Image (cartoon, rainbow, N blue to C red):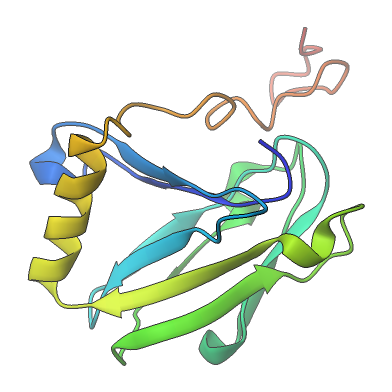
Length: 150
């Protein structure tokens, strides 16, 4: 999937720790990232294709997402303190449909968040997205063990 964002709610936080659930956007459908008000969240960013930049202007935070980059350099934590909907976008010119790489952050209470995760599960959006865990392993790049990824 290119020209959009995908959000995975990891099993240790989603649905009582039983499974991952995810939301996938398309250039035609802006994805929504749901967060709980006054609850800290850690983001682990991955790019399966080119350099992107995760940016939510209202949060005063932006982080570049570079394929092959050390995962520790592509994560951050924050605590949203105001409920509401906030615009997010890619802030790195990433190609032909860069302008369509938009998303919405919806900050809600715990009950609404849990209801959304259950809805994702009921729609069958469970498991790990293809490319999510291995998107930083690009053929020809050296890994931490100095081996070449194949």
